[in-house]
Length: 508
Image (cartoon, rainbow, N blue to C red; front, side, top):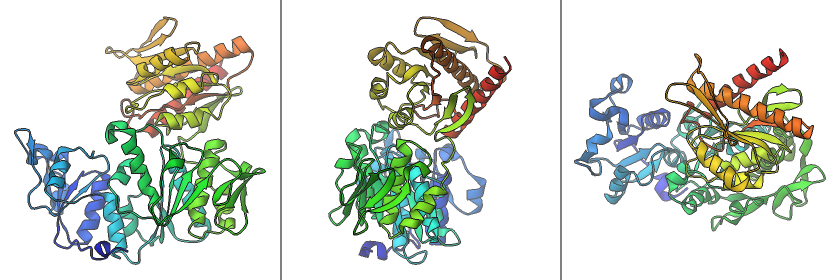
């Protein structure tokens, strides 16, 4: 525990909390308990907006306009600390002005880490930090399941479930925190030094927020500055990240592990890092989700939990009992031998690549907000797997352009909504059809037509080759907020459309 952290005292401090949604409210609750004087900043408070619940708690509220005079943003006066929600970018004018004025800017996880290390909620917890472009939620949940199987008190938190601030305040107390951290959270939490941290993989994502791939990778590297630094050796970028000067570096791989690594030997996950001799952990065929990405996540979860002394038997029990969360490769419908697979959580090209790689022949539904991430590699590397692609969402044309450059032989369709509410389907051969939107939302109508178009491509593939495609796969490679409230809502829409289609085919 550092001297700075052990001396943390928030009583009477004037704290500006930037963001008054779920994360900001969790931060407010922690600061209230520490007797800080809080002002909440949010766009909904601009020009005199207010929140009755906050007003009832005596919390001051301001909008960004309070610090903007004729386009010039000044640092907030009489503020000792700013705590930001993860979505605030580093180049936000108010935060830049605050930093220039010497006002500390912390993320919510940085605040929680300092509060925990200072003993504000009892003895400091054991932190396991999990990050990566793809797989971090599954890995975090697997790690939680493993620790639970060891009968130690644990909570998954951070970018999954509870905020870390709420996890510190939760009862009964959890002594171990499995903290999923996004690149945003890591950027705003430079002091965090976990007992074990893992970087699964690093691929193009959130480049619009970080400004460059190097900045994004540097944020991910923050997870490796604790006691044990775990990296995915099969990922070119993650395997090259440096650990902290005092960190023990461990790797994991789908190959046979060398000393200091976890890997796979004769159908078994094996730990060759945390014991004097290699220790078998669990049979590969017992792991869910099946396939390379699920196995990779299980190795990472085993590594971070073994790093804190969890025994091999608990690793096996935890992974055997683990069930993947929704929208992560679920088969939601089936027509004959073709599964309709919801991997809506694949919100970047790297995650979509992992989803596609599990099938020999697939029709992909992709699109949404790509956030500056290129899809060229996804298309080029998998063109022999694609029986067709259906592109939806704001950045559908970027996907279609990539198909034209790298896989022009792959049948492709775009589905979109016109201004009059009708849903348009446009094929690469020039065919266009219009389907009048019904009472469904335009997003649901687009998804229904996308599923229908994907099935038509699957039927065409079978007619040509005599072999059914393995899956109609929703792996969007993009965020959902251009059309849906969340990736979950997008997946639910896909499931509804797939079930309706399966029912209609069965009735023929």
